[in-house]
Structures are given as structure tokens and as C-alpha cells.
Amino acid sequence: MGRKYMIFRAEWTEEEGADNRLLAHTGAYTDILAEYFDSSNAPIPAPGYRLLEFHSADGSGSSTHYRTGDWEVVRVEEYPTAIPNNEFEAIVVGYCKYVPAETPLIPMPKAQVSIDSFGDESAYQEFLQSEAVKDYTLV
Image 1 (cartoon, rainbow, N blue to C red):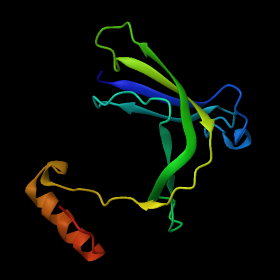
Image 2: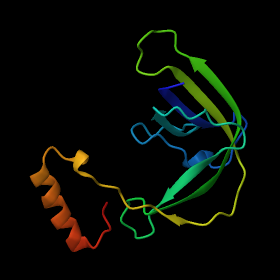
Image 3: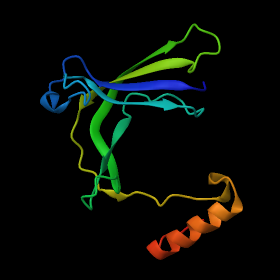
């Protein structure tokens, strides 16, 4: 299956961390742990799948590291959309339970940048020169 809207939420009875799950724009509480669009042809997550957690180790607020998280999928429901040519073909809901796991922080991989990311060769070359000062490894 192609385009999917993925929603991961705390199981109905899960209370762990409930006080910290606020919707940023309303301040209301939510059970939604993560959501994203998936355009890959990868299978939907199965029970046992764990959400990733992202961390800022340098205090910048940007994610610098990630780890396998404490929320584990225990049940999955898939709802194919009935509207042809819709933005996505299915809505997938993964219900999660809090199961603490001790996993290491892993550094985020460096971005892979190519000329395809830019409109023209001169913009790409300008980017390469600016990034060389930052000492990044570019592809």
C-alpha cells in the first residue's frame, strides 16, 4: 500500500505520561504520541514496533540523537479510504503501551545533499562552499 496517514496513540487505559501530552496549539490533553504521512511501500507497523524518540544533546532544540523509545505498539487498526485519488490510501492507528526500554542514544546521520536538492549548479556550489566551513561530510 502506498500513501498512509499513520497515527500512534496511547492505549485507552494507558495513564503513563498523560500529564505531559498537551496539544501545543490548544493546551488540551491528547493521547496521540506521534503522527506522520508515509509514502513508502513499507508494511504497516506490527505489534512490537517501538516509536523512536528524538533528543537534542547540544541544547539547540534541533534533534541531534535518537533512540528506540518506551512506547510499544500493541494493536494496529487500518482503515482504507473510500475516496478515489485521495491524499492517502489508508489511515493506520497504532495503539501503544508504555514499556520502558534502556536503549542508547544514536547520533543522527548527516544529511545527504546532492545537486537535485537545488534549482541550479551555482546554488549547489555555493552551498558546498558554505558547508565546508562547518566541516560537514557531504555527498
